[in-house]
Image (cartoon, rainbow, N blue to C red):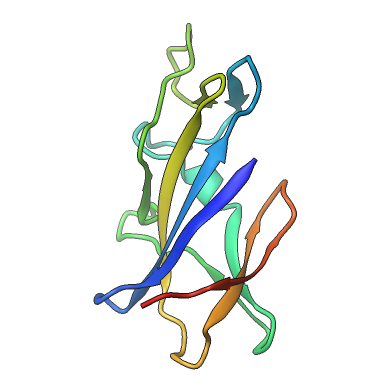
Length: 130
């Protein structure tokens, strides 16, 4: 399960998307091959998230830094038990993992936008707060 917790305009002229991935089961959920080359962030997951402005017919991808890494982090990133590669994300049993990710600023007249996360139904018209 995925739950959007906020989508906010920032003083840096960006948007910050915050969301939780929730595991309601009694077993850990292993999301394979999410971390890419950076052990401290799930860059491959971030490649699968975009904002869709259906009114203006625009799609926005997450911002990247000068090294090509997406500007975002997992708040609580756990290693997979028994793994030395660190390529997988593990959401603990009955647990959740929180994330944030930066996007380019949208025009002020855009007050809501759809959030697309591959593998789950799109979140329609998520309000943008200031």
